[in-house]
Image (cartoon, rainbow, N blue to C red; front, side, top):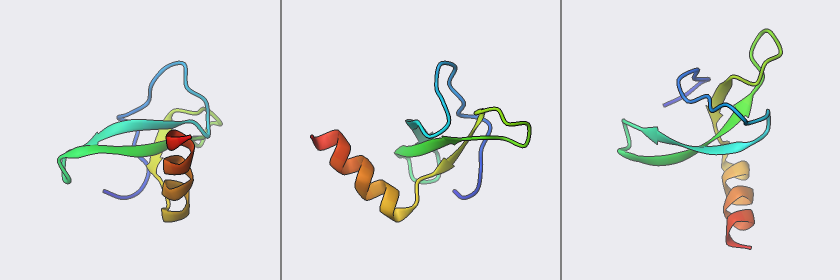
Length: 62
């Protein structure tokens, strides 16, 4: 799964927030980051980059 996806937007989130979404291809929950769409709204998500995954894991284990 690559790119930006509109399907996982969750009200009450802000750009930069990390949320868990279901990845049908992998059959598991994965972390995505809320990003701004072309109108400046935080309504899209994208998979985390490798370095962001490490930071998210470190933050969740603290």
